[in-house]
Image (cartoon, rainbow, N blue to C red; front, side, top):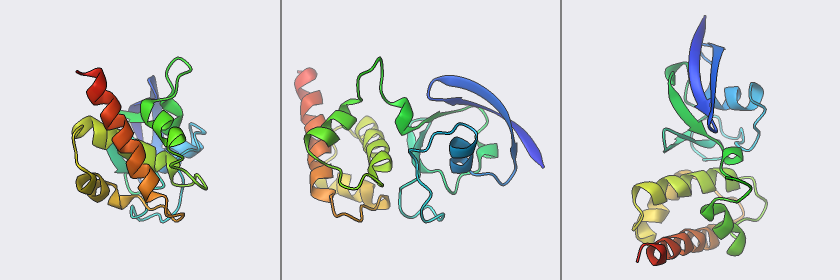
Amino acid sequence: MTHSVSLTVNGQDHTLEVDGNQTLLETIREKFHLTGAKMACEEGRCGACTLLVNGNAVASCVVLVSDLDGATVTTIEGLPSEGELHPVQEAFLGCTALQCGYCTPGMILSSISILDKEPNAGENEVRRKLSGNICRCTGYVKIIDAIQLVQRDRQIENS
């Protein structure tokens, strides 16, 4: 059974027909050809498929796209604005918070969600909130450094 779904993906409005059991990850990768989000565990446990849906980090491998009519979806490909990387992307580069890169899109999107919802979250809270994103290269220290760098930069901008 197919469903008509309206989505805004990376700022572009789309209406599409989707199967009732099609996941957001499948739709993003197959219909939009956006491959930053990775298929890994298919159980919502690793974070490789993390996308932002209405600003919330979600495991797109377990979310049915038919449940998202009217939603706004942001992928890693949708972050650069006017040729400029997002501040979290810049911080990940500056802190060398990536190794193989497989987890990086999900880590960055989860980090953005954390920073937007709890801009002053402490290190332990950030670690807890990132616990759904697995880095098999053990890059967590530099990832936390990158998030804290963005927090400091935002505090300076706001003072």
